[in-house]
Length: 92
Length: 208
Image (tube, rainbow over all chains, first blue to last red; front, top):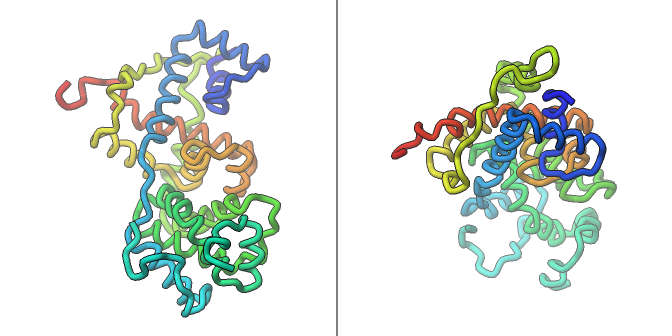
């Protein structure tokens, strides 16, 4: 197995421990190829770093602005009340 | 039906009621999915204002197209596809060809005729303790993902950040599974390359 084959395989199956013959070949290659090990490790870290970026919260007021837009486009009746306990407050 | 009863309804029942003009059912669908839609919109747009415009356009489209939802995929998959289309429409006017071409060339690290890497792959020597998202690294990550062309960012976001399967990613993006895999490979390789100068040289960090 070549480094290029390993590259394609590890990119498709980053965190999977599959039992196929191809996966066993990849694991054997990784045992002897320092470059492929380094590449796999850095790729996993890349993905983990991006996953660790916090997801943005819905901005304050975005829900109310959405409801207004939906009413303006006829998607909700103008008299539609929001299913909220405290109308008139911004949404965190 | 009370508000509590509406909140307990399954998506399918809400969709059926909303199709028949039940505004409370549609409002509940909005309430149920607005955070997911905004989060995904932001991850694709990388800009609060554009993300909110996409977020609003998405629910307007949902209302208008609800009659075409055939229930063969999950409602969330259908929603993701609408966000994706809205995001792509917004980006079509922008010039991204240059980076797109460089990504096409980014198939794998350089290899020799016998398929071996021709140069040593830089080791990322940072330990987990170093990988706390400090301001500098966070900025580097934001900058790198902002450089990814939308077609690649969509696949990377769906697969690696939203945790979708290859099959669902392909369905949402409207591409084949092979195309989804290929774009994911290139996106990961591009992002990795963007972070390598930072990750492979600890001396560059402040105070080290």
